[in-house]
Structure formats: C-alpha cells, structure tokens
Length: 293
Image (cartoon, rainbow, N blue to C red; front, side, top):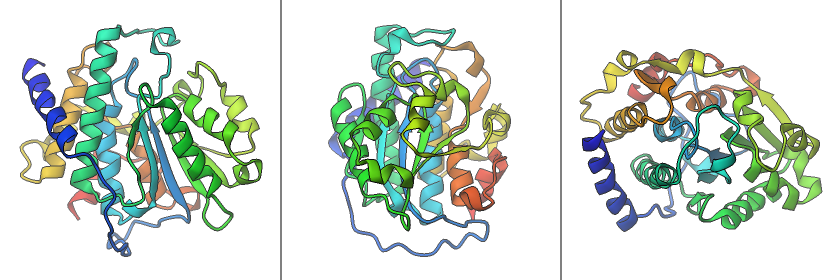
C-alpha cells in the first residue's frame, strides 16, 4: 500500500497542475458494433469517500467506456465524494476523518487523471468534490436537469448516495424532472442517503432504472484483470493502478483480493442501449473487448 500511496500522492500534484478543462472535439459515431447510445446527456454522481473505495477504480473504467463509445460529449456533470456526512454512514464498516480526507484526494486525482487521459469531455465544466464544493456540485447538476427535454433527457448515474441528486432535483424546474432518468444498480446506494430517502427521489417524478447488482459480474478476483496489468496503454495502465489501489485500501474487508468496477456496469448498460436492450451483465472480459477494439 505504501508504494501505491506514494504514486497517488505524486499523481495528485500532477492533476492539480493539469486540471481537466473543456476542449472542443467533434463527436463521431462509435466504431463498436455493440454500442447503441440512447438519446440524451449523462451525469455521474460518485461516492467512494465512505465506506467503500470501489469508485477509485470504477470511475476510470466508466470514463474509458464513454471515450471508446465516442460518448465523451454526452457527459455534462461529474462529481465525487457524495457521502455528505460520512461519519453517520449506515453501513456496517465506518471510516475515520483522516482516511476519508485521503479518499477525497485520491478520488480527485484518479478521476482528474482519467478525464485527461480519456478526454476531452468538452461539455463537463469541472470535476466537483461534493464534500468541499457541495453547493457548486448541486448547482451544476441542477443546470443539467433544467436543460433536459423529451428529445434530450438527462440520465443520472447514481454511483453512490442519493443526497446530491435529491438537492439538485429539489432546486430544479418542476417541468424538467419528468425528463430525468436515474440509473441504479444497488439498494446499498439507494437507501444510504443522510438527507433523502430513495422514495423521496422517486417522488420528484423522475424515471427509475434498476439494472440489477453489478457486483455479480464486476467484483471479481484480481486475475480477471490480468490483461490490463503492465499494459503500455496509458489509460489501461491507469485503470489497473486505481483498481489495485482500491483493493489495498484496507477500510472494508470485502474488497480484499478483488477488483471492483461494479459502478461502471451502469455505463456499460447505457452505451449498449440502456432501456432499449442494454447489457445488464457486464464482465471484465466485456470491458477488455470494448477497450481493446
């Protein structure tokens, strides 16, 4: 773990010096035969700061999938550390303030590096840390909601607690909420809010999409990612590094010996058709085939 912490510490300095910035890029159809992008834009709200570190590795995977599907221009919001009060978390395992702060720094570094490597994501203003930029994250997500239309709905990937989503919906224009589609893969996220219940999220009038527990296919033995180890590809190397970091994080025992990219399963479902026949059963082999095409 010590060597990985040193690597990530150096990366945090680099990502601070080279923050992600909007860049113009012409969107092109995806060359991948299994990609079938739905209409609309995409917001990704990520946890990772408590208690489970899986988003440290999963987020670079999901950004790589968007890039490979030529869907980078669809991403209009991304935020992390959305457990707004991590010390009253309902989960069995808890985190202390020192490690929670470390997780915030690592998430910032991991995701900013991925945004740069797999970008540009020209319609994403910036990466928000919901613990230190809560209002900014909420306002940015609210803007995305208020731009949703029947022809161009907003898909929100709930990769963590629902509170930021709830606050943004609360501030949004009532008429726009019907064009919001919230995607979840696990009740551990839905039911973990400190300020909003899942039912309150649904009561805003959003469209719910439950795609099933992605841990079944994407929380795997480390060996399932051997294809990414020692890769000369900068992006795949970053993915392996961050999956490895999360596995060695040490706060929760259930990630030991496993690489967990489960939240990326929601993006895999989305790029392969979403509710029009998207694949709900992604595996590391599916991700390998996609990223190596």
